[in-house]
Picture (cartoon, rainbow, N blue to C red):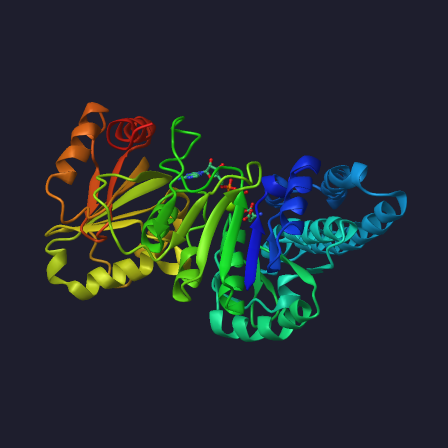
Length: 451
Ligand code: ADP
Ligand code: ASP
Ligand code: MG
């Protein structure tokens, strides 16, 4: 039995959390592969540095060094600490060369290379602490493991088949020799050998890719909450842990804002029917959430609700647009260029409406304006909207679900800007102004999910 165990940023973020994570790995009897995120805050620091023009590398490197050393300081003997420090310093030396190049080069792979550095430092840390505790752990980068990625910078996708072949060659021999590989999450490698990140929060996806490639029996995502919950516990105080979920349900919620899983985590494990468990590093006795093929829908009106913020509605007017089907597809193609995700689409006789991240609007508009056949008569953008994804059993077949949901939306004094129903059997999605979205989620939860 092979188990892939992924530890998120808070689970490796400080001395206490690392101690817990190490204990969880050490206590696992199965053959295991560990995947780690950067310590919480490190990726933000690296990305922040790249955005702040003119800053030299030294400050950021000292900061990273300090945070990593202080997380292990009291747990290592003098000799172990010296060995650890020299590995971290060697890694940071490489980072300095990338940071220096970043300021004078336009190499498009450099931002992803730099953003991936927290994961590299994290594998060194985790493997070192595990070794000290008697686990024969080996740190391994995505390059060494052979995780193949394609796509635009900052938004890569894994190429599962070659990745699987590589992992069998690189990771399986270590497992056969009784070792525990500790892999970097968050990024893979292009055909040209350059790092390519999977988007923020991408380490969950990395772990799913590894589970798929090795044909693992189980993927465990260790995080800082008791599992996949009925809503984001930061928004809804009495959100509950969901014991069991279907892959589809978890996938919809993750795509539409449930940050507990990177949106792409589900597909690789679903393909091979690998059980996915979401568990709490800070409460390892808890059962967590089991995500698998759950084919017996119950009768729950609503089971969970997620919220995706920082979205915009882009409305394109062109007379009788629906009678020009090629034009609609050209527009969608232009908007979706460079990996822009479209969260909802709707048409009327003369309009095409899409919901996309606000940060992608300038690029989408640029692409639309560049179209030669542009017959757009008017274009409207509405910012500050959020999409709410309400998931339940049989959303389509059950009479009156929409009226119940929208009744609550009205009570929350929110205007529904767009509805997407019917695309999924289990989800009802709609867009509301962002300043009303949290209230809508809280009221829906209170009324139909409960504390
Ligand atoms: P990690 O660093 O372990 O990857 P993240 O911060 O990425 O952790 O994800 C965990 C967080 O996701 C939780 O702390 C919680 O606030 C948030 N979250 C959002 N929606 C949900 C949900 N439906 N269930 C559980 N957590 C959620
Ligand atoms: N460290 C990366 C991020 O902060 C990936 C992850 O945490 O999953 O986005
Ligand atoms: Mg995460």
